[in-house]
Length: 313
Image (cartoon, rainbow, N blue to C red; front, top):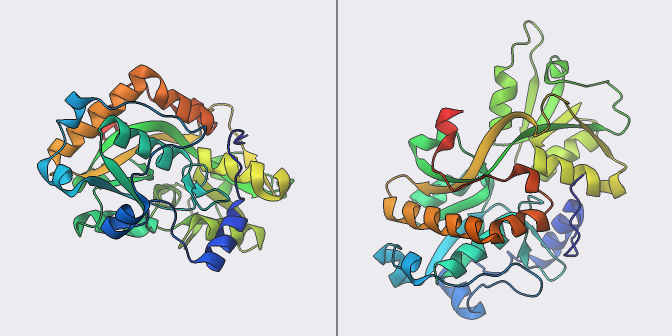
């Protein structure tokens, strides 16, 4: 089960409620005004920290250096990849790793809340430089992006507690209604399943929380997401009493494992190189592993920072 032990978290439902009440977008804000108001976004408290490497900082493109920060598109909340703590600070694997990359490259980062289905357009419009949002590395996305891969795992199936429809494998989803977040690979995989005359009815919803809510409300028979996310949702919703995770002994890292990573426009080759080498430095020094462990997703680690491994899966 995914259960964070070092930082107090709000549940996904509580996070959504808090956001509606506060109207805030999280630490780091969005763009130059927020960066100037809040100062550099660095690790605090018991968050993992590192040191700058001037040789790696020299790899950054001139336009990034001149701007003085890297703008990062993050879909929040998407626990345990990204969420807010009780102080409305962005935490989780993506924000914490993003801050580490900034430290290593000796540059500020701005963590900008962005809906998942708009993260790629935000790069194309020049509003963000990186996507750190648990994005799967796929050949289709590589037509636009280069990925510096940082996790490897599959997807998991969540069903109501007690598993009333006795789902045990992917094929059991044939003929059922399954909720997923819009624009995710899971929807594509479900639609591509060979179910004969009984295809999966895929219900795509704007956010991951919406997809979970559909299952809780009985509007879907199952909910499918990245394994790390599904495990966290099952462990934290109603103290672990709302959902069961369908586990396949033959696929301990989840069904259809894929690489996920940091998305960068494929033409930004200098930035790709800088991020890849900075991530490799974090892997070599052990801070990458500590961030994984801190978020209880170490089972999904990569051994080295590589680019576009999704093309060879």
